Every structure is written in C-alpha cells, then in structure tokens.
Length: 333
Image 1 (cartoon, helix red, strand yellow):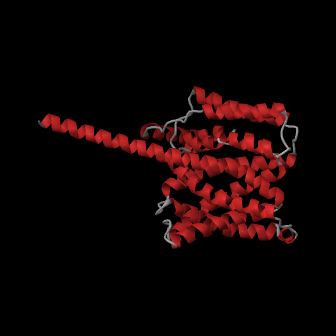
Image 2 (cartoon, one colour):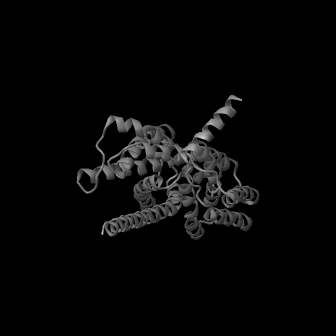
Image 3 (cartoon, one colour):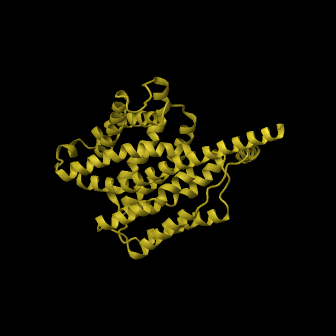
C-alpha cells in the first residue's frame, strides 16, 4: 500500500507538472502571436506615419506618451495592475529606456531614408552577433553546425542585398549601421535587465520604460523638429496613421517585454525576423519603392535561414565559469 501511495503521489506530481508545462506553452504561444502581429504591422505603420508626417521624433513621442498615459490610466481605473511610481524602479528603468529609445529612433530614421526591405534584411543578420554575445555574457552555448550555417546565410544574404539593391542610398546604410550596433546592445541589455529587475506586473515595465522614453523624446523633438512641427499639414489620413501607430506602440511594448522574459535574446531576435515575412507582403501591396528581384531573393534567403535557426541551450554553471576564465586569461595575455 505504501508503494502504491508513493506511485500515486509521483504520478500526481508528474500530471501537475505536465499541466503546468502545457499552460506555460499555451501562454507563451499566445504572447508570441501577439508580439508577431504587432511587430509585423508596426514597421509598415511607422513607415506610413513618417511618410504622411515627416517628423519621426514627433511620431516616436506620440507612441511613448500614449503607452505610459494609457497604461497608467487603466491602472488608476483598476482595469490592470500597474506598479506605483517609485524612485528605485524609476532609476532601474532609465538605462532600459535609453537603450530602447536609441534603438527605436535609429529604426525610424532608417525607415525615413530607405525602403522597408533594407531594414528587414539587415535585421535578419543580427542573430549572428547576438548569439556570440550571449555565449560571452549570458551563459548560452554557441550555435550548433546547422544554426551556424543559418547565421552565416543571414549575413551572406545581407551582403547580397547590398550588392543588388537598386535603391542604394548611402545615408540609409549609415543609419542602418548605427541601428545595427544599437540593436544588438538593446537586445542583450534589456534581456538582462528584464530578468534582473523585479516589478509587480509586466504593465509596470511598459509604464516605466515609456515614461522615461517620453521625457527623453520630448527633448529630442524640441531640439530637432521645432520648425517641422509648425509646418505639418494635418489630414484625416495622417491623424489615423498616427493613432494606429500609437495603439500598436502600446501592444508592442507589452508583448515585447513578456517575450523577452520568456525566451533568450537570440530567440527573441529570430522571432522578430521571421514575423517580418508578413511585413514584406503588406509592404508589397502598399509601397512602390522596392528592391530588385535579386535583392528580394536575398531577402527570402535570409528569412528562411532565420526560420531554420535552432536556439542554443544554456550552459551548465561549470561550463559558464570555464568560459569566463578563458576569456579573462585571453584578455590578460
């Protein structure tokens, strides 16, 4: 009877663990779909908003303001749980907001000077750098042979796109280069900070990050676009694009933070790259400023390679310690 009782307890424990894993998987899948929807639409909507309102800093400011204001308002109304304003959390989220804002600003400046495909294909090559950085700083294994081939294919596709791109523009690629470096840092640092900073709910992350970003963006907008704002021509189309952009900004902030907490930095980057397939289809319908057929073929190769990438597992504590010792020894040598 004792053996039967122990067996029943083990089976019950296994059943509960299985149910918990299924619930976690379902939750992760729902969050992933939400992030993919927002990410796929955000790029095109931002491009449309900047096209109708040539003031990228103001578009960003509107997104940030809408995000923290709507979230805080819903929190005060008791609809959602939002962290109270505390100095310790405000201080902790300043670097997160700075990294986030720098990445988004470089993103939207790139969209101002280049077609959407230019941005997408360079974004598709970022996992190579991020996967190596995760091995160095976040305790991940290096990519296996299949994944390494996928990452090299991403880089080759980006080089091919630059060669075949019929709409080559030097200013665009300068901004893409700046965005590339900022984006890699953003992915790694925010993943680290999300895991290390304790909040009452995910809405707290959205509130604090966008509150800081709104303050910084206000200064940037006042310094760079005062005359542009005075000469803007407001139409129903431009106001609608700005409103949709702001709404997507709220959703993007929420789902992005949950995804960052659930998966590795490289996996989060790959997820964003793969969902850009939908962006390409939307972009083909809306815009006439596209790359050549060869350039689009390179884009397709990069997206397929991103989809075939396999996430590297976490290293054991002993392996991570060995890697740190090896890096330190190399630096001293």
